[in-house]
Length: 155
Image (tube, rainbow, N blue to C red; front, top):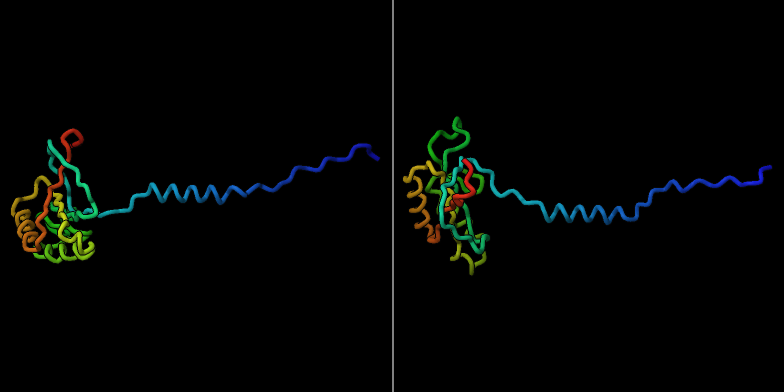
């Protein structure tokens, strides 16, 4: 008979009480840091440079119109196209687009809608003036042109 008793081994269980806390912390981290996709660009964009820029205060009132050569030249041709909300449209569709964007806003903010035009630097002025005319017809009178600051431009 042995004089000493054999020591029982340590418990094999892994403590899992902190596991839900860790999972929720990771979930919150990804929810806070994730940026949702805004728009898939179907047109090429090389935005012109500018020296003096101003920031938009309320970005929720801004709707973007992209103008440039299409990325899929075989499908859409090489002439500059107009893109709004992941769709290529003709200038005649601008009025309908503006009305759809106004419907998304509250009634008090509808008159404050701003149309931002991101125009490729090689786009012809004819398509830009067509869009401007259609914006006038849609009563979207606040128009701005998006540019990049000179220092941050990478060619």
